[in-house]
Image 1: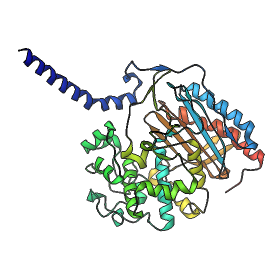
Image 2: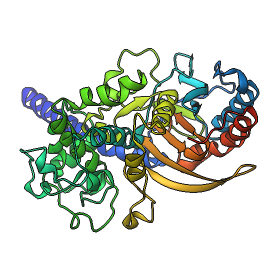
Image 3: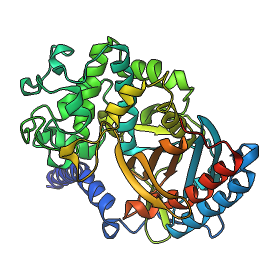
Image 4: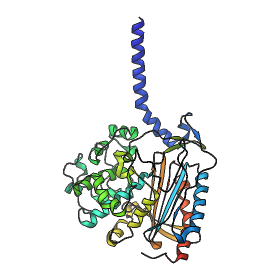
Length: 418
């Protein structure tokens, strides 16, 4: 009898453990969305005084740097962020970068301008850069069917999609939360499996429904970029990682821009945090490799700003191709989405109306914002290692930063039209 009870107990424990293990990703999704769903234990209070980094700054912008660092600290405190980091380029040169707060709260490690953060969907602008380079060299055509490059697509309904449709979110693929490929849907919640190659990542959504006829509507979906990355590596006849390194990262010395999974031993990696009213807890371990091209990169703000600056160089992205990528599609009017970027005009106090290209990113315990401002030949990138309920509670610090740096650049005489 005692032996039978033990067997029943072990069976019950096994079933319960399997159930908890299976449902844990659903809790992870809910806790990502709602602070009230976050469990009450494991939290650390953010210390009242935050460390302030030593800025990278060029000679003409020391005064602007001091003011910008104060702006970062005020915003970090306002949004209860472990850290906040930003960088600005002018005429292709990094003129300022700094960080405030903690890279790792438990270890009391200060953030610096060398700290790497998850960049979320800003990865889409990174992927767009690789695509633009392939278009410029004639390796791909924006309007060719992707079946011209990828002969073994797992879903035949994809064969007539074009790179233009994928990079502009007009192909008709579903978003993560709408995925009707149920095994893939669970995998994108669990974030446990490692995908070595974009072709294997296609299994996450290759049985998902297509929402509409390609080219007739706009529907923002990370799966567009995942499929595009598989096509890009087929077209270039090399791995997507090798392609991005050779066409984008190496030419611009972007050492920190890398897949999230490759930063395990990097001493500058930021811990990504959940937050709960002035307290933080490290995000659960996740693997974002299934959506590398859509949301799986990490970077310093400095390297992202330099990447943005490269778009203003004709020898990197020819002007005619740049204008194609930066022209919003009429059917994406609500978001002003072009090819891998949004194009907006906003007013800056003391500066006036500026037009800019941008892409934001929200990831597990991190947020990112990249801006390119052609008329001032300036770029800006901002990162934090938490997620705010309203994205622009974090990102609109760019208004204050540009209010400092655009006049300073004009005063220095370095504000040149590209």
